[in-house]
Image (tube, rainbow, N blue to C red):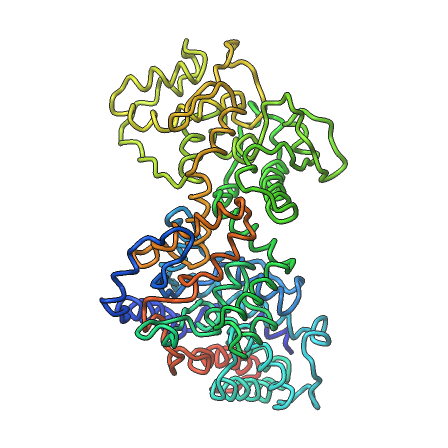
Amino acid sequence: MTKALSHSFPRRLPSVVGALLLGLTLSFGLAIAHGTEAPASDSQGANRPAAGASESLEATSPARVRLISQEQYFNTLAYVFGPDISVSAHFAPFRRTDGLLEIGAAAAGITSGQMQEFQRTAAALAEMVVSPAHRNFLIPCTPRHEDAADKGCATTFLTSVGRVLYRRPMSKAQQANLIAQAGDAANRLKDFYAGLAVALEGILVSPDLLFIMDRSEPDPTRPGYRRLDSFSLASRLSFFLWNAAPDDELLKMAEHGDLQTLQGRSRAVDYMLRSPRLETGVRAFFDDMLGFDDFAVLAKDPGIYPAFVGDTVQDAREQTLRTIVDHLLVRKLDYRDLFTTRHTFMSPSLATLYGVPTPPGWTSYQIPEDSQRVGLLTQIAFLASHAHPGRSSPTLRGKALRELLLCQQVPRPPPNVDFSLIEDPKSTLRTARERLAAHRANPVCAGCHKITDPIGLALENFDGAGQYRDTERGAPIDASGNLDGKSFTDPVGLTQALHDSPGLPACLVKRVYTYGTGGPIKANDTSVLPYLNSQFAAGQYRLPDLLRTIALSNAFSRVTDAAAAPAPTKAASVPSAAPPVASNRVAASDRLTGAQK
């Protein structure tokens, strides 16, 4: 019966659910915008920079409402149901904001088309969970009769699953409504598991799952201020460090109030940093920070770069992420050394481009000391993604270095710029340096190119696919340059200059902090950055220490908006959102059986 129904359920989302979620996005956003600020006498101190290595007691971050990302959604489901419970889905991407896609989640809404995708995904996942292939180990009970409702078994499953997916215990009203939906659907569909799928689908499209809501409460240690409640703090920690919802252990800590004490939160953060799930979170952050979402459309001209094949794109991405995880998490080394390290990993498809012997699979690889390849800047991922399909681009590479790694904004080129000197394949100017020098003769172009070209030209020993070369069109390549007053003569010199730049670790601190708190820096949380920078330096620029410092900071747990995300109301709760889903499925059954609604 369930299988038959799966082909007959309408794929159009009932308009009431879409309208509900769009309304919730607006109402939560208004709640944040009109939240009560801290008293004026205290809030003035929030803008003072922290002195030395001490964090300002007034440091806070804004409470926010964020839309869950596709990766976070499926990471959470993998924890709850196992990695094989997955379906093909395409959630709309966020708009990159202040250097990160994840920050765009705080400004993302849901269109009716996007909600239909959530609905389709939820329906497919729910049916997979209750299917005969999975139900025996995912559902911890067996109904007395498979063709009718079983309140006890439904309660056992839905209460447990709802707690983890909602990231907090369900209210009695929520439980009662979900169990009633499951029972009503089971009796009408003559299938206990189909009824369970109805309720589970309601959970999977609920605002309580799709939105990460920062609910706040008065801070007893700071009268007049607010702090995240225990479950919102657990969610902020978990999405920050694991890129997924809290697990059962973290939820128990929240239930017991452990997260609201520094000692208890320290234990929780240390537990999370020891977890293998930390690698998932770190990969997600650097994937976002380095703009690897662009790899989905990265391609090279096969006539110019025949060695850049289908596997190259994914392997290039994976090489950089493996290097990062090994360097920062496994060996716990200085973040700055990522840009001067000669230790990396190699795959067969990459070995061709690097011009080294082909390994049988992913293997550890040490770059020779006499090589100009060193650090992340000279890996295929950076070089190929910041180049054109048929040629290199010093401008794109210089722009990427400044924006991605130094948090500096490079202005966009003005309209109607003449690029003919750069793009003309028949130009008598043989090297990119010569062509860009002629291009900069235009005063309209000179300003921006002075920012990007002196560093981008240092990578001209690598073509558009990232392969090493000594010449371009027969002319020797001059890889000299300058980064903010520090001169160098080759790619190795550039990587060392970047390593030594104070902007490099400062940019990482800013990016990690905004990633963890879910939005751009605001006036009330600027005071935390000097503190985080000093702590990062004192800890020899080790990422795990930075993550721990941020997670335990006042600004991470204290918020400025008193009404950032209100307690669940009838409009926001699952019982109000789920009935249209259930009625949609039952309507399909009625049509199959000829019944009249």
